Image 1 (cartoon, helix red, strand yellow):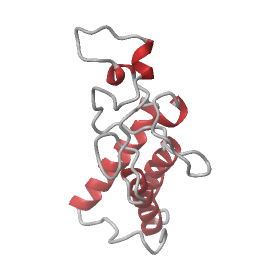
Image 2: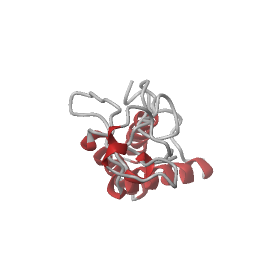
Image 3: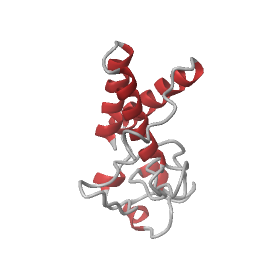
Length: 143
């Protein structure tokens, strides 16, 4: 999800500069709606529809203190003991396949570069909503 989220932010900046304003804003919205779970599974931890519960993140995977944290924490079958609310995981593969497994660091890693574009795009869309410039729908572009 990092590339679509980052590209959504670039599209929103381009739209603010008069390039295909309506089309780019709708497209950016569609990318964030996908990340937040409009298709049945979201990629934002602790938010939306069917969010990931096993992100590849050491602090989230470690047991409660004072228990030690080691590689065994990565092998835990259940959800992570700590929820990283608002963190976006890597997301699905090219075939839209996704398994919520902390052992799959490509699809489940939480990293700054994955999250920067998503948070920037979310903030930009919130600004558009507050200034009444948010497109009414994106369904005509991404049905």
